[in-house]
Image 1 (tube, one colour):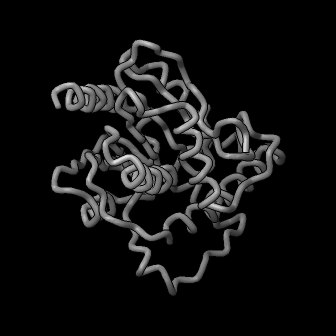
Image 2: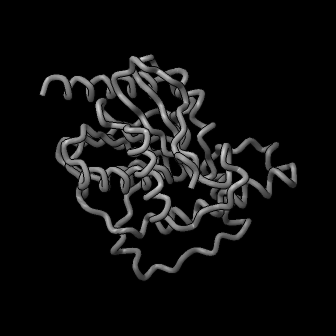
Length: 256
């Protein structure tokens, strides 16, 4: 493991909230840098970087989700995230499954920590109902079909043979990770949680977002934005909403 699997997107010493983006399947830390720079100085931003891409492209892909979760938790502790400022975990698509599992572990290990969770573009799946479901064979055609549904990969990328292989292999690895993540036990969370998504998402219908309520407190909120699976990169309302939620989280801390 490197010193950290979380990397600072932008240093903001005067920030009131620390935000961690946990990226989608096939994504990387770089996917969130532009959004991070658009956020106000009130938010200090960190991003997950899984092995095999971005700043960790020279490392082999990882397939052990428990090891990855341990690495994320170790990085949060090493960077002292959430110790003196509220911590907001934002998981998009596959990242939502990572964010949920990290939040669950942090809630158990540090119950007094001010923590909130955003689950984006990921429906709820009951692991008990998946026990007897076979693991999908992620053929090239299957992976390409998922990429097409998500509509986040420029067509010219898939024309170049080397880039095409890189994208397919990265996505396939992450889909295997996602399958393992989805089958992990899920327990109820008592932290503030927001479930958000796009109203034109071909991969995750709004009805699947609603199912997360089975695990969340009554204070959980759902928000639907205009856009597809990657709505957060094209809809400026997401940035405004995110800044509002970050300030609310900080306000809760300072009024307790």
